[in-house]
Image (cartoon, rainbow, N blue to C red; front, side, top):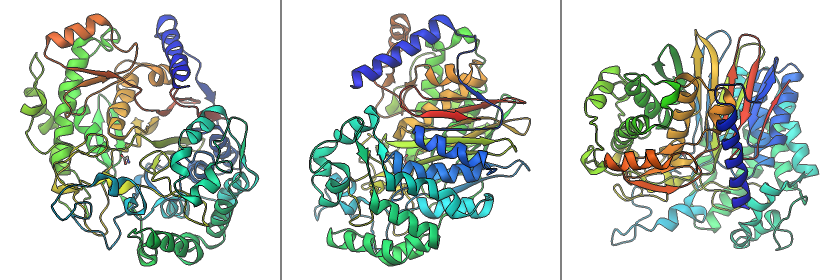
Length: 561
Ligand code: GLY
């Protein structure tokens, strides 16, 4: 099935680039509002909220709750995320609802008595879960920046869970490919298998326990999740499975409203997420360095462009490994990393040939991150824009449905540097900045971003993809600003990825020609394997209309009206 999916992608990419580069493609166009997410059902729910007069924040919250039902792969109540908001009155802000380490967590919790790292403890079972933040984050956004009541934005999600969703083939395939994992946990098998058998296309997935949990949130706000029935169910399941989350951890959980990371690139303002995301700092660093280069449209994916991008990315990811973590626990040098002066240092270090990664800041390599996350972008007719990325970390998190509560738990603890210097599941390395401490947030790559033109939203973007999120979001921005692509071309265009360690350029099928690859190799670059990179959800905003596209690598929808 992946072959079929990827084949479709290739056809789309070839079509786009052979017939319409520079011409307008066929993105969804609308005048009043737009929601682009990984789920058709969730995007349509967001649009209904806008049609009822809600603003982009109301729609984003409704979409977020709907994704928890309709896109259980990464949409969630049991995980966390980041939201970047631009309000029509010019205020820019971000909401950090990243999961936190439970109070009983400790630095060496995933090491045995000999100091040997036991990765499965941080990736599987209840030991891998951080304290979830999604419910708190969505409700905080609604209460501070929305206009509607909780029950209005959550009702459509309750209905989806109660009445069921008909599984389109790619979601059915995604759930069924995890059947054996779900069967390890009776509470998960009850929801995500059909009496022990895999789900199939056009089956209906009914989630009654999840509907009840959503109903409790609708009636009691954050207390419907962080206190009482649901909190008890989480804490009991955690305790009986050797996990660390207690009712107190849940009662104490708070999201944080943080000042965004601001960048300025070739006349555009970039509003993006700061720590505990590494993404905002990383793309700002990269854009500051890239500002020193000018590209023609015909330079797109040339060897000179890829060489420059990769050399910058090596340095950015090396800094990520060394310096980034939760700012509430570690003094991240944000101003220095995002300064134009430091970008000059990066640029000065770039030669005509590849600098081997081991010679780029021999710091501590980076831990890996899950690629299964999900992003959604929302704009309204009032001038508000919201860019949100949420995650359970791996697909379906740790695959454990909380008994009686109907939702999956995250395995986000793996995003900490469990043993500084040892790679995580995505090969990323980390340092002391991202070591485990009680109550600390694990480092993320999620990069929800809003690009402003003359102070107004111009491009809303973001993507899943673990450590590749940063390079994917960066390339969507470069495609729009430097290469003047429309939103469809931007999202369809093949991507590359380099994260310093391993020292390899990963690339998408048809993304790099043989000549370009040979040129890069001549310059000392090492080519990695072909892989699919990200699933961005983008909206490009013009004076009197919006254009939006869901990434062809996924199966979402741009919904507009
Ligand atoms: N779990 C993926 C990320 O937060 O970047």
